Length: 174
Image (cartoon, rainbow, N blue to C red; front, side, top):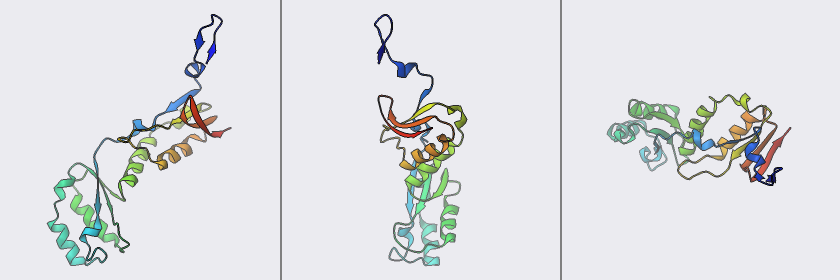
């Protein structure tokens, strides 16, 4: 803070048109997400027996994933064939909003990435940019998203910081 000629306090940070704060949470996709662990369909949680796998998929309640993003993964070290993921995807077609390979954080990154790819990053040319650090638990921003945004900003910004205007960590400077 500084004072002007009349002795009034002036917030120079707020007045700066070169300082921009980006809140990555605003790119959060609100649609519900679910995970499906393939372990439950494996013999002893480890072995993929094709006919048993197919039978269990037929009997499974797929409607529970209606309208959700679904991440398919296996929590064990079992070797899962590509066709197994394809079969699960086939059962989710028309029910799930979209199907991903991976867990919730993998889906979350992909959903953020899609939205971040729509940004014209050149609009931050020669700016001092702060990637807002405090995020709510309801709208998580994984570290991978900060990394992705950093890679998009570096070619354009004069300075990149993390945190808040009053307390930030410098990340990059030209």
